[in-house]
Image (cartoon, rainbow, N blue to C red; front, side):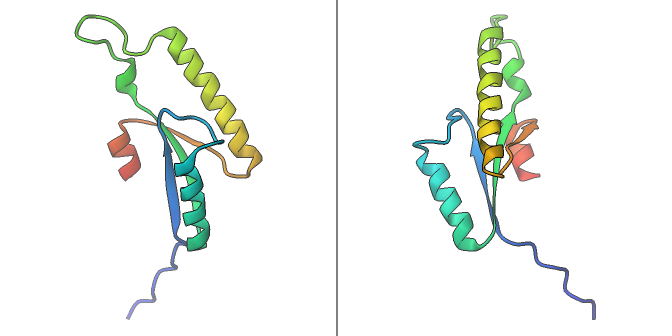
Length: 102
């Protein structure tokens, strides 16, 4: 009989999508409360979807340079705020369905 593998503590993944702020974020507050109730961890995640940089069928970029710069500044600010709370933001690249499942 093989020994049982060690149990990983339970946790909650919080996926930041378009609302990249900490204050007045009810879903994040609920996720943090749930993680604490489970006695586990909270994993804040943002997924950079490469399809957002693709061209539309009309030849326009889905996300222009100004929007990309704004998004990077917002992610930097969010990452700094979360780091101050000792809960670093995980920025992943890929299609969200695949990345989050992995």
